[in-house]
Image 1 (cartoon, each protein chain N blue to C red):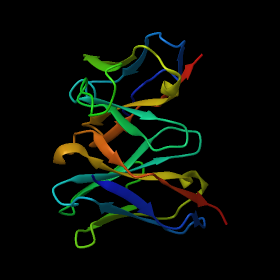
Image 2 (cartoon, each protein chain N blue to C red):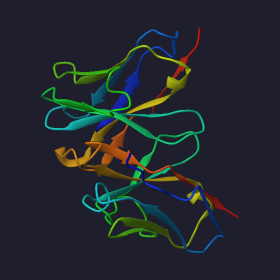
Image 3 (tube, helix red, strand yellow):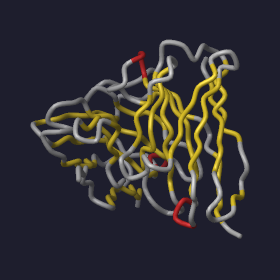
Image 4 (spheres, chains in turn cyan, blue):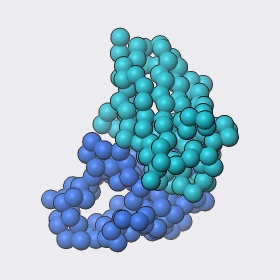
Length: 120
Length: 110
């Protein structure tokens, strides 16, 4: 079965760029849409953006100017970069798959999440 | 800005039936299907209900979903202590062109 694993630094300094990678195992990254979601401490879920295996993307307008999404099909990975981070970007970051290859569909597979703290 | 509104909390005793509501608008629930996620303490969200009322394999039939117009509901019957978790509704939003999550409902089993 497909599994997702987020990886990246757990601590990022203010104004720097947060970089995370999601590795897909047990299945192919091809033919699916993939999303990033975050959850600040004690708060709810916020959708960050999605990427298709072909490279097409869309992001939450609230973050769009700071977000870069990319995919590496040869490594079965996709990545998130969030620039100019502040303490408000401190959160657990999740990657997830859209069910059935449709962007409108549910997120049926989630990574375990990785905690990113923004602090000097 | 699009919003999916859920009650912040809900509660029930073992064996009871509880429902959690999710109110949206024509750009999300009114035109797209609703999904529900269960998040147990300290864990990643798990898909509970998809396409308004479908259960993924392995989800007990105690969990059910429904939708009418721009609102949706999650019902949990035969409440069990292990159901104590945060529940989130979500739907594609045409204005956002992305996934919109509700604020989440913390379910307490008394």
